[in-house]
Amino acid sequence: MQIYKVGGAVRDRLLGKPVTDIDWVVVGATTEEMLAKGFRPVGADFPVFLHPKSGEEYALARTERKNGRGYGGFIFHASPDVTLEEDLIRRDLTINAMAEDDQQNLTDPYHGQRDLEARLLRHVSPAFAEDPLRVLRVARFAARYAELGFTVAPETLELMRQLSESGELEALTPERSWKEIARALMEDQPQVFIEVLRECGALKVLMPEVDALFGVPQPEAHHPEIDTGAHTLSVLEQAALYKQPLTVRWACLLHDLGKGLTPEEEWPRHIAHEHKGLKLIKAVNERFKAPKDCQELALLVGKYHTHGHRALELKPSTLLELLQSFDVYRRPQRFEEFIAACEMDARGRKGLEQRSYPQADYLRGAATAARSVAVQPLLEKGFKGPELGEAIKSERLKALKAYKAVAPA
Ligand code: CTP
Image (cartoon, rainbow, N blue to C red):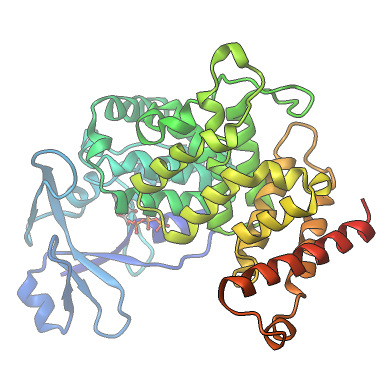
């Protein structure tokens, strides 16, 4: 049997990037031989094994053919006569279809190295279309390698366009799509992921609510970039620049969905877009079964981001309502993430990226003031049940009034 390093490990070594995961392909072996060498079988779908010591993945060379719609509809053929070239041709991109032996000799039948140099994400063969998830993968790689100057080859973009129009994307499971979305949002240029999906028509299928923001104007005074889609991309870009976590990036992407529902005659104003957007945010959250913390933050940011921007003008009672809605007493981190998303929203505007955002510290101060109310003295005064709740609220309101009176405006 011959063993080769394949996929991302070869690509990233040639790019001079750190390699974390190594995938191996084994040519000329049978399952029985692998088991006899102590490899542990994994995965019901394909003949893939874990190395007894390193735990790395070793797959028998295989060919694949699609059988029906969606994922899972695959017929694969793995046997000792499947060649390395046959295994590589079923892969997604030329830069992912190179193999290397233990002497670092490269097998590159589909010119991955040439495309690495040309900074091109190009599909290997028409078999690309057999897994619609690859549309998201290519957009994710575009986001990851944008800083190196990579773009999607025109013929690959065309294939992605056809796949998006064919209805195949609808067959993806929420779990597979979310995994790609989450990884893409955590790249350094997550806005490129959305741009590429939009360019090939996949955004309209996957997140029509986000796609609808392009072409929707906002008032120039607050939004020099005018276009709501362009604004959303800039907010995402800022979130990555400021190394925000996934929850914040997801909330940034969805915060303005309500603006896509404004009737044209009301443009460029978007009255009550925060509230109108909530059902759309909920729909996107559920479509991809986003994790609970991402779902929650996206809804809260959608509902309250304008409160964040107006923090310094809010009445103490409105400030209290905001803090209560976030349950800031038990979930201080979530409120921090809300503040971060509001700040990214404020910075994600053309020419305003460097602006200061005094609302952030003001909100933190308000949270500290409300949290400083001690419950013990109220218990000692004999408050119980709902009355205790009311008494705490009223003390918090007092604390916020005092805070507002002295906080620098
Ligand atoms: N692959 C593919 N189509 C997919 C998933 C994977 O062709 N839908 C192939 C590619 O050759 C890829 C390899 O399997 O390089 C390994 O896949 P994976 O580990 O998911 O990706 P990597 O390329 O290693 O990239 P990453 O750095 O994102 O993990």
